[in-house]
Length: 327
Image 1 (tube, rainbow, N blue to C red):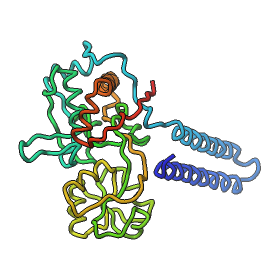
Image 2 (cartoon, one colour):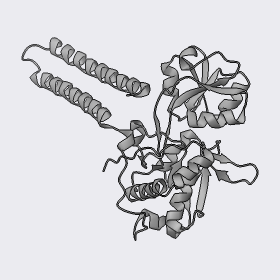
Image 3 (cartoon, rainbow, N blue to C red):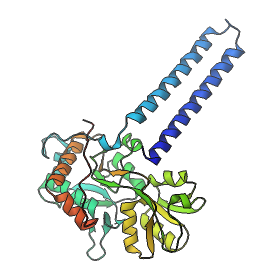
Image 4 (cartoon, rainbow, N blue to C red):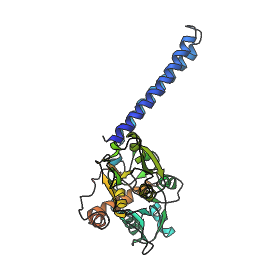
């Protein structure tokens, strides 16, 4: 269990304990105020309330323990096929796939100023999905969104899919579905080369930048640093360059891109978390989740995933992340 998972589990247990203590206190107070046989119905109601909270707390802890973000997606039912009546068929009839993406994360999703095209590793995953629907990697409308917009845009149907360096977490799985893991990142720290900090542990009481809607803020707070939130990671880089923050902390995949844009910065510290990336999809379109997973399985098998990694991330290409499914 990584540091962030331990922190979340601890908070969950504490919240459950506080809730239970509050109801117990209310029940005991009610019982003490009443005569032994004066309000049996009220006493029984109090007992029911206590039992309800106990069961809710146990269920919550069980759900947290059962959640495995890296094995939470639906298995493909074969090769990617656009079947009649499917969500993929509706996308094909519309004529284009709508993808929520980043345009400011170098290497993963960024706007190339030379040709005005959005490109990167995440974008290649979207192109593969589009190719499986339409027979070619075109037919995509890219909607540039912030970290904070990712889940709302899926929930309100503004986009069909999100490819946005998005970590699969248990909390997010309550709201949206994800594809299988297509990339593994780790939270680290970016500082100026003049800094003596060697990780979040050295930044207690100092300002550390992250984006609104990212899960990086949790760990920043855990290390008693002061989180400063902005819409985009490039905003964090500007704040670092202006000495308005001491560091930026998020996934190393994102920090690598920022460091490539500023030679006066450096990545420091250990890998603090595991950040499994998935493509986010509405829970209303489980057929699309299975379809996307079939596309990703093909990408891993035919070398397309490795080619994209080599082009955008590093010439030292690892094996793709191991795949596991919920069903």
